Image (tube, rainbow over all chains, first blue to last red; front, side, top):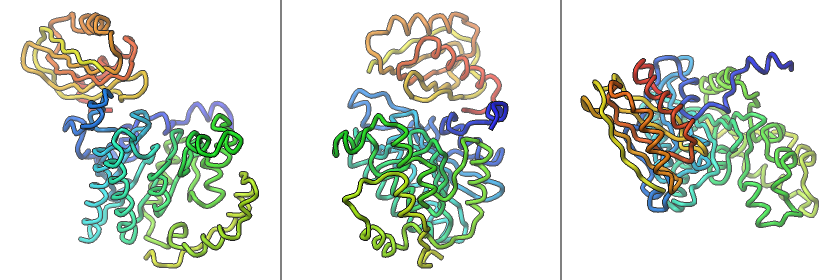
Length: 288
Length: 103
């Protein structure tokens, strides 16, 4: 790629959550729900001397993408590491539950989740975890009716309980800058030791949990460059797709069989992971 | 965390509400709403303690012109420098004046 092309590109990663939503939705279709002027911010952060954001770092908006009715939930990566607090989590869970009611009433609204999150906000502990559990349950119920589209654009990545939410999505879109993992690098280093996992070794981290690797191992469906137009095209394609089989989370036995066959004495690296997960496991067909 | 409230003489109410910035490292969020005729208010919550004098100096200068539209500003600050403070407030004022929506 030449530098001129790179300069002309409009980055998606550099946009804040609200700008991403504005970019994705068809012009004039955007209607934000519980906007910042409703001042639904965290009741817990001020008690711990931490400044709040008026929308608690989550933007929820209804609108259309190329004419398809959607509800977009975008997490703001810059506010508290995109962490899920009680209010932000409840906004997402509530939006998904309303989409489920609509789907059951044959008025399908496709959820699009922009997942830039280190998962639960530690200052809000169980309140955030409860919301994440509600988000999981809502995605599982919803994906039988409509596609549920997840997007990880990076560089915060998507970790913890919200990485499970990403895994549950019907379609997961990521960039090379994105990461997807249950535990973040520092957590792994703290638990397993620096010899096992050096959280400062960025090439190693991205080789294992980066978007390109997750795509090669079939945990991500579509790999995009950090190009707003490309990402929007991928999302527009995903929201218009019919509900299909879900290879990742419905073929549990096939995944377990593959994991049981692993030699756990061997140190995992990126190449081996690609070998082991070279074949995409196909869903059992319960999805439709 | 510290809170600070300031107010200034102003002109007619602002045309629309506006939002600028996020509560991220070195940045801040400005919520701008039209205020009653003749008075602007600024409510600041900042993560940095002990810099009330700097805040007052920066905001005093921005609101030195008493003919500006009357606004109620709420600022949630996460360590923004005075330059970023000015930029974000200017951004919100411009949006409110043009009615161009919010970013």
